[in-house]
Amino acid sequence: MAWFHASTGGADAGNHASAAEVVACFHDERPLLNRLAFLITGDHATADQSVLSACDITLQGHSPFRDCLLEWAKAATITSAISCRAEAIRACEADYENEHCSFEEPLPPGLEERAASLKLIFQANPGEMIAELDVLCRTVLVLTMALGHSIQDCVLRLNVCRPAVLAAASHAMSWLRGLDGGSAEEPQNLANHQPHSG
Image 1 (cartoon, rainbow, N blue to C red):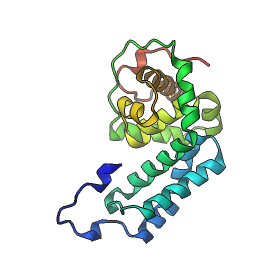
Image 2 (image 1 turned 180 degrees about the horizontal axis):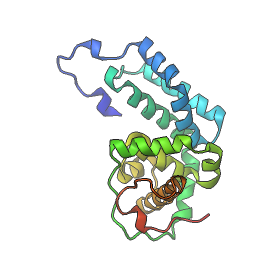
Image 3 (image 1 turned 90 degrees about the horizontal axis):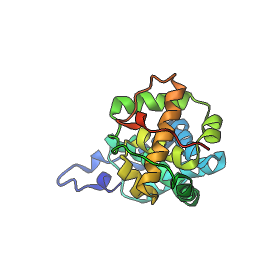
């Protein structure tokens, strides 16, 4: 998230969110942030703690720009949730070692696609999503749809090999399309891959 702290040159400090604004953002967006964290952690208490930790870290660090505050809150919350489940996420890599992905890396989703997919995700029963998708699939889905991460971004963030991330992304997008009766937009080339079973 270093890009949030890029040098502002002569920018007015008033462009940065105050502590009160940070707290208000995390409070006002708590349902969204909790859902994102829960989809990764699979546990309500851990999700709640992820949001609280993300808020504390934000308050203790450099203040993010006001215009980027919600994106910062989402990124910080997701990072906190991933750190809680990092071992389980990496353990999923072995489940995909025999997957064969013959397509190129999909393009990161655009803003409209992200918004539509997030809407689908939030309409879905989170318990069903957690039961049907492993933690790697869920995390890749959250990273791509909530933050617009590419497959390579996910590889670096999760310390999981590229083939496993691609297979998990394919499985997650297939599941997401199923929620929408197959009409949901998807990243380029994902339709050509058979989802991981199990």
